Length: 136
Image (cartoon, rainbow, N blue to C red; front, side, top):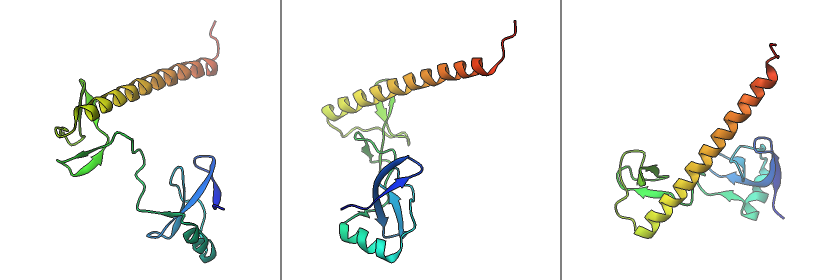
């Protein structure tokens, strides 16, 4: 049976992962340090295979691409239906299918972000109206 713990940051119960490099246990969802591990818990986590392999990169997406200019795997930036790396390099050596898929996903992500921003702004206006007294 897997070792689980409640994480205060993400407010969910998830598997606990042990990092051999830092000797700390982390939440499986948000990568926050959750509990201080004693040698018995560490042995149990290692036996169960709940070991973190390297640092988890938060914010990674399914459409990350390898940039040859900066030698990193990055989430591309969409500008005028073209994709670029944050360092300014382009992605010239990818197939047309992957290129179209990435552009489509980044467009959807941008629309979702825009809708979320509009919603947050409308909620902010409602909060301001509730907090300010009527001046009639």
